[in-house]
Length: 241
Image 1: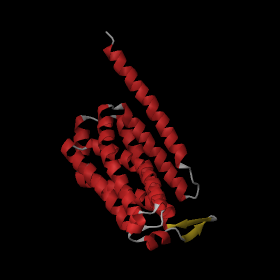
Image 2: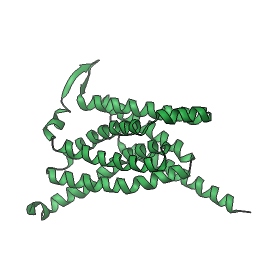
Image 3: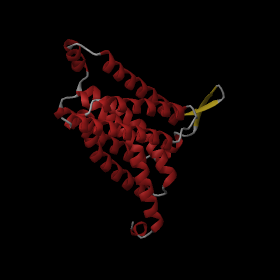
Image 4: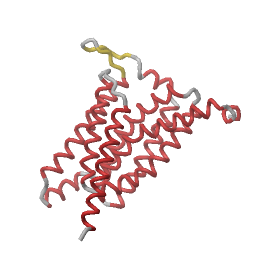
């Protein structure tokens, strides 16, 4: 352990991997922040904490099974000339789920509901159901995250430390993002668009068409910047007599 702490290469891989894990965690943060907003405040906070705790647990547990994780990348079968591994199938399933979830939420936003319909939906949208959906996405993003970690660091200790720091940052950021979405309803549609984009990228990865995450995050960053300008302009208009 002392040898690792005194090795500059290890520190470089730790900082690089931490930044990468934080960037990859953006997807996780957006989904959790989006899905918990329909819960009562006390349950939403509990769901947020539990969701991020599960994200941390999944990542650390997966790191303990590196051989199994590496095996997930081995070809399982071929279809129409395209090889598929367990990782591909997990990404495909997660991507399809995100696309479905984002589309369903957009439908609800535009179609509107009566009070009776809202009450009925909220009774079905139980805390346990929300946690179940968070678990599915946490698992998908954890597999993607750990596969990246394996290629960037040689020591499990470094990977675990980077994951812990990244999830801690995600925990702090998720509260701010969730509250921001709640205060500004227009950003909800933006978040749903992000989920659609992330879902499409996961499906593409599962089918062997890798879309560089830099392009996706650049598009998301530009959209956030435009929305921030719109919010500031709206505040200025409201203050102007």
